[in-house]
Length: 497
Ligand code: CU
Ligand code: CU
Image 1 (spheres, rainbow, N blue to C red):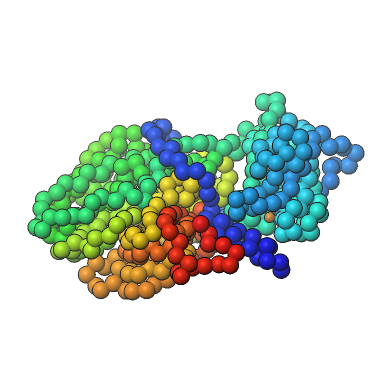
Image 2: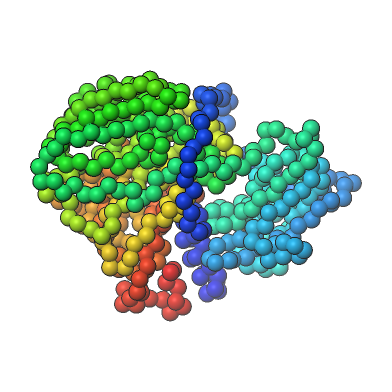
């Protein structure tokens, strides 16, 4: 294998794990009214693979006796460290992952030319079709189909990992409304409710316990799940995860839980930091428009999960109802330069991962523990393209990490870093572990990791169960500053900056 190919593959590995990249943007805003109660589709027929897209059929020639109405040519290549399709000829020449269009009823061909001697193909979501694989430079294949369904469909490379590495674009098929397929998925662009990782309240500086009030509102909201996809999240205070709450051991806390007027479900809250019945769940089963409360004394320091505990509890958690409450020990935590708040969760949708449009909850997949989406802080890309973590060389960082789940434990890892200290299982009174690569975090559990940043670059937060990175689970920690070649160097200058 040539050096340049090796170099590309290294770059792809990192990018594939990164799930997405792009300019930082913070599309927040008031969310629209929630949709009516979620529909519960019939169970999958026995033996059908619950969350596997159907196998792709090869389609490389037009139906017999038919001519090609519309032809596009795409060349595979690499741009800014991502694998991409590059338009060739006409107005799309040189355009990365170009937007294609077709009219309903046309016979369309996408000619794919190999431009990088890595194996590729081109596939079309929604039609279940693909071209042949091509691996030699200059080799060509075709994907030919009759545009008989209107809508926006993703074309992508179906070689594992290549779509995540950047090989995807959109073809929009429009036509006579009468012939259009009303069920074809249409992309949606809903506001993000993903909580940025730097939404961390300040450390508690009080030296004595106090009496506090914590106010939470449960809100059901339609919001961004991924680019082009939306979902009805159930939240605490309108974000996923819910706000981090920070108190001190010995504090007496009155929790007031309001369930928004326009909710369709009852909600509640169970704090793992509470000693008492249901962690507060029994006292806070709250109907829409109502308010409940309870008071607890924080007897044990630590980093604790809170979550909704209204049946189906797993569904309420999956839909976004979780957060962390930090109970600081006497004397507090050692100071660091930056603190972050990251929580992992998974969502079970009827529609396969990546399908555009508003997607819906699947009770069957939840009971089978077969999620379509995994993510940090509430949505795919929330800690990569939307709000990456940022810090500088020389700084110390602390990540309060929790797993909402509801079902999947995390092997939390930061690619290219080593945790100097780990407060295992969220215990702030046991001495921290030192020099740890990955930390196992249970559902309804937490860990605190701390490390010093010694070298610039983009460090990727993952669950080292890495299939989940291909279903959305990744975050970026972007570190700026001087590169010290004593710490890391590469003869080709491949420092990943
Ligand atoms: Cu490919
Ligand atoms: Cu709930």
